[in-house]
Image (tube, rainbow over the protein chains, first blue to last red):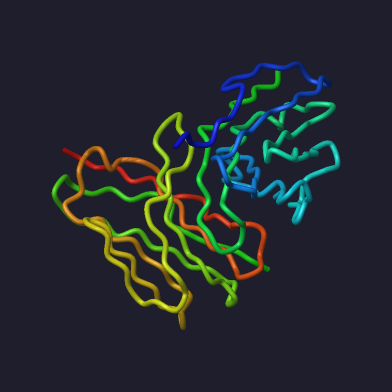
Length: 113
Length: 111
């Protein structure tokens, strides 16, 4: 079956702009988590959605938001981009969340200039 | 709070065994994972272990868990150059809706 699909793979934006990233989970998976990966901070948890509800949120400012649709696809949005938002954004899907392993997409590489 | 720590680098010779270590703080951790990340790629789940297990073996991979010391290790037997990557240790607790990752251990395999 198809894996986790993230689009776009690469993105360049200017400071102050906003960006929307998309994640399509593995078919049948209802949980989607988002992570930010940077060389300095490693993998940082952003949020997790299950059945269109946000179940947990990491320590990121309100400029970072997300949502999940009824088909389990998820989007995350970052408004008023800052240079420090440049990172690899990874999405992971799992069947139900806490008791099952997560499968990751290849990520979206966001560069803010 | 929850924290997962790993050493940052490990260098081994091809054919040797690699052992990557990890410690975690959350005593309610139920699931412990090892992920592999190759350059330009996402994370690939290698193996996982439940907290009620001490050991799990999967081909060249052996995971050891010392729950008392909150110590997890990944042993790769007969390490190959293709094993060069970053290895992440991660933990998740029952009822937790997030997975906490370590900073990753970069494994260099010398031919």
